[in-house]
Length: 205
Length: 156
Ligand SMILES: [Zn+2]
Image (cartoon, rainbow over all chains, first blue to last red; front, side, top):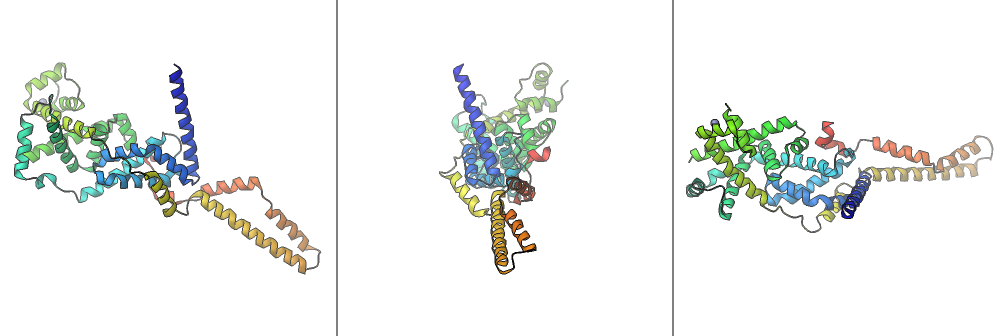
């Protein structure tokens, strides 16, 4: 009981402290913004990584996202949590990045050797989904990674938010400024397209 | 009878099929293939989700703050404000010096003495004036505007 109250008080203090940091940032205080960055950097790194799946790009993207947040801090009106606001900036930024990247996208499957393709498929054929070995999981992860990289930026975003970042439909709707019903439809379409793409690839051997 | 599409949506969501859904799956080879494929994809997604994301490098926040100080030196509300106030103080000072010089040269009568008191009034700090200035400044468009507003504010 006492512990519960302690936790609540600590949370309240953390929220007060954060509101103060935000207000100071809104007055141009960069050091206060640094405190906000320190609090949320790991969350933003994780989100960016799941959305773009490029380890080498995460830090640069995160930096751009925080710069955007600093420049736009005047528009933050305390209506949503700061993390939710920051996440929206991150999602928008990653979406732009993926769209730019899509122009120069590498066709992974076509790069794969014939033997590589056959080996992968032979492996999938007899797989028992309920008892996967670590190696099989890795191979499946690799396959999905490639399928994701071939999907459109829209499909990727929605799939990554749902399946990799573990967001609920409601959260995704808020992040993308869409209706929940629209998110459901788009999610279904994205999954369908991913499976169709996989089938197409298998047939194209 | 459930349609293939409905059955597949349930499969995607990981909902366990019961009743008509289960009947459909038992008879539909296409949906069985779909279920198999999707379960493989799902396992692949789970494997990706388990991968630990990269950590921020040491001093990430500090470097960012330094970058902000270098890259966006002007344009923040507070610095513009201080600069503006500073300029006003300097101008008022100059005006006072000028007026006192005029007062020394000109005979101490008539309009000059009046402007001297006016100048003194200008130099006096006025707190209510101060806050009005701040309000003016928050109304001035700043570089923030050139960035797309976060979806949050766009929605409302
Ligand atoms: Zn069917």
